[in-house]
Image (tube, rainbow, N blue to C red; front, side):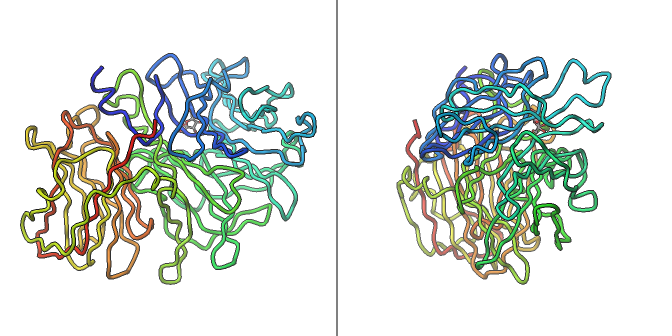
Length: 481
Ligand code: FRU
């Protein structure tokens, strides 16, 4: 189908065919980034979940690999993580080589109608760098204690206690477990019943050890569906402390790693040292099954590097596209000191828009502005900008093209501006059917899909009040294939 090709991203991972959701088991081994994912190999809607597999040397150019994990008598293979078992604590290693161990949820669809204990945690190992996997014959390693939503184990090595820590989504909170060997798990504590957003069930957590000005900071990601700030599914985070047993936080407000409608279930790679690398599913459970592609459905966000940033007395989690992306980038134009009151002459200078492309915009935070991407022939448009009065950034896709497949798709989405800097720096990354907005060095982030019937061909800058834009730089990206 023509639309399937037109909407297929060029610098983001998408499956050659059929359905994907959450990124799973991300681990870095011998110079290769592994990305597993929730995959239905026989259909473009959600169904019996497998772990699909892709690899990359630079987090941008992905190569799809054979399916890694198939459903079995214990159920479908739901989300989870993977680690390098450096000390061979599991005993799965062979010939002195550290095994990879995947930890995932078995979802038993046969018992789910009449029982509550249909989700359990299991493990599998690989002795050939993630190519092939063997499921442990002692599965499941954690039985269900009577919680219907009991899934998405994310495992990390906790140095101070010399134990593996698993963070598991358990309905309306996360539960931490510890283990010496990835097989025997002990419950440590729960976190979250009284914290954060609770508009939906908690899923896909990730406990991340970070550093700020030489001090250890622990960040907990938790995806929730529904209950997102712009509807449907999104990922919140908590800044706090973890001592190997419990997670504590002083954070009072609810915060989101990405306020946009289309970034869900994202977690970080393991085995990347101090570099914290994140990728999310670039979709939303509200309409993921109805997106206007047929042969393939859903893609991943651009891989992002996480960092902490201070604003006032508060620490925030910020994210930016990985530096590896610049290898694909060519600057096409840089326009300086543009005064806009009505429609400025930015159109002619940039010329016809190409995808994938990027825009870096630098301007003062004292005036509204809108960047409008549009197609003259169809009138379809995507508006992105800053609303000074509301102090937020927005992406308005209400007239962006095909929008009628779900009522929640047609909207103007917003993200609060957290930075108090006098200067706004906005970075936009466009692919065939997505835009990712990174404002103020990744403090305010928003990802949104769009499906124009014809490509947008033009861009213009608008402002209701007079604004002087310091610089607009325009980049194109070569296809990562
Ligand atoms: C999140 C999620 C996970 C689950 C998986 C099933 O998007 O619902 O909680 O493991 O998708 O595909």
